[in-house]
Image (cartoon, rainbow, N blue to C red):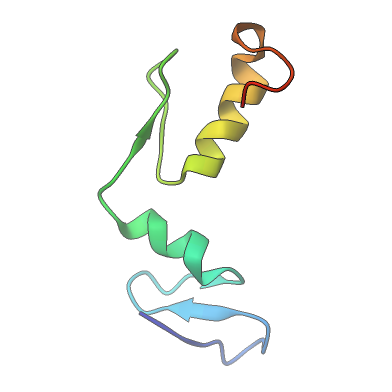
Length: 68
């Protein structure tokens, strides 16, 4: 799914969309059908860490300091 980027040795080029990325695992999830749904609004994300960040910044009033 990835090949080495011809322009930068630190990047990988996605064979699906041609985007150059540094983290193959994170980018891989952008092409999968699984979604992480926010329980408080209509937002959806392809990665759980992105959903957690969204919840911390947009819905922090629902959580104590150590809930997420």
